Length: 75
View 1 (cartoon, one colour):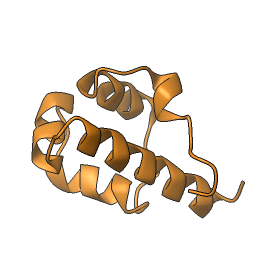
View 2 (cartoon, rainbow, N blue to C red):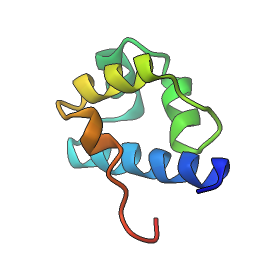
View 3 (tube, helix red, strand yellow):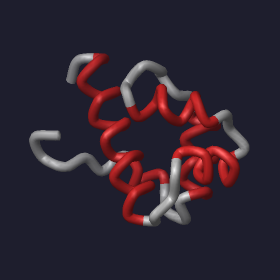
View 4 (cartoon, one colour):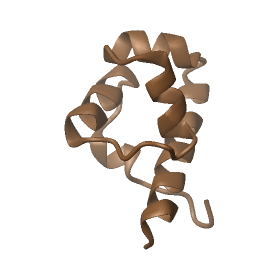
């Protein structure tokens, strides 16, 4: 998988799970102790996120890291 492709898939997954929880980017960022613009950059595949921040987002979304890394086929 190419670098950009995995960033796109991860960003799409974060957006999908965030919307399923009816959270805005601002609400998610607050729960994860991250900046709102950082969440947007992740969702747009503009940032290569660290494992520490992946864990923060997983906790904020009340899910596992494994679930964050489960990508839909074709997305």
